[in-house]
Image (tube, rainbow over all chains, first blue to last red; front, side, top):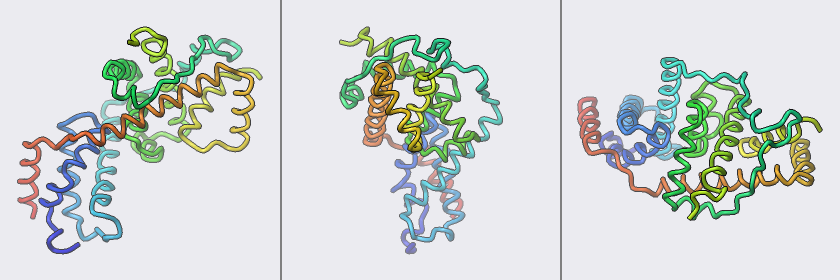
Length: 190
Length: 82
């Protein structure tokens, strides 16, 4: 890093918005996301000797932020004791005794791009996401909306990959059913 | 096979999160060949994944900025630290 680049205020100016978006997409809270930007820049400044320059400054800052976010989620879980029992299998309701479908899933052939631009659909999607149990929703959103890899998510929520797969499966099945009922089944489609 | 569709729906979901083993892939392929409902389910999850991919790209392009008050606050915190 040149002396000119060694300036946390410049980091804020150049990467602040990006870091903010990164945190916001994972924490969904403006206040909290701003705090994360502050903590990240502070930690980066205090440890700037550790910046090796083998990655871009932004990548380095994002790496620090990633850990901050994971720490935050871990604390939050301990604090609020967000529990999710895996014993009750909610997917059982979708299948009969012998493991065949109770309802008939339909194939969706709509164009994802058009759906993404459709405000009415986005509302239905939000609504369906909000019905998921808390931890399932957090994990699912971190994976699908924030696009994080399985390893970071398992780290943040202190769960095994197997547990993650179970939560993702439950979330997908619940969403598939909810979206079928409220959109793809033909109800509010205009 | 007992519990076939239930088990297959879990595997179908996992195929979006990890690389399946060859045996698992074969199991899905064989099951899909004879089960239209699981084929539909797989297809709907593909569309779902596509939707979230679109939303991710869309949100990244959005011009969301760090609120100005937060920017000023962080600015002064950093100044003190220097």
